[in-house]
Image (cartoon, rainbow, N blue to C red; front, top):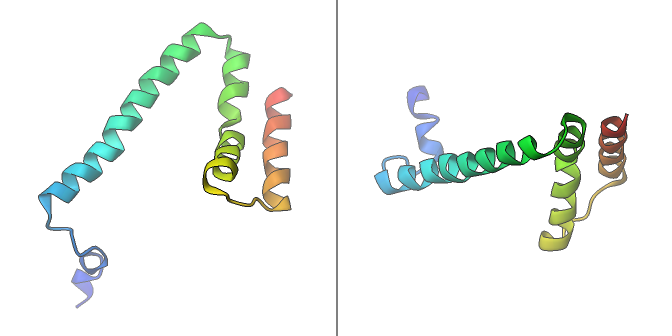
Length: 89
């Protein structure tokens, strides 16, 4: 019935190993990245940190193109340019 709708979306929801892997994937690398980011932010000025962190979508697009062969649309390129421009202002 209706109560099992979300449970039926993932057949491995009862698998403890799957939940442990999922938890590790979410918590482990995220925590490490956050700590490294905070250490890096201490080394630069607030404006430099803002520009670097605001460019995350641009870096993501570049890595998507280079590593995965993705193609960005004109709309996505304009959006990335606006983010970059806003960071510079």
